[in-house]
Amino acid sequence: MAANIGTDVESAAEVAGVGGVPAPGAAPELAPNGKPKVDFSGATWLCSSQGVGDVQIAFVDGYIGMRDGRQEDGPVLVFTPGEWRAFVLGARDGEFDLT
Image (cartoon, rainbow, N blue to C red; front, side):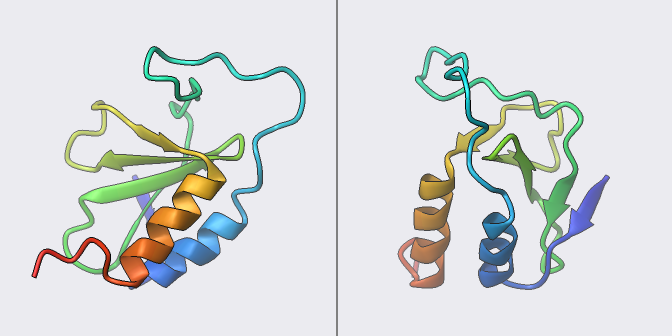
């Protein structure tokens, strides 16, 4: 079950601010794509109140995961806090608009 994060991308940016930074200590194990392996199995997934809520995000160990809510067992895109911030700011500025 996914919780609601609000009606716009800026709400996601505010939530991202509480995501923190990756935990200090040993470097995380990396997947073949070079991204950290993060266990999202117990994560609380958040979705927007607009649309049908197909895109969901979760914050685990300072990383942000994004998945298709229609395929909850499908792949999770993993972002560092810096990558997530760049994505949210780009979306807010219309960088990904298709029109």
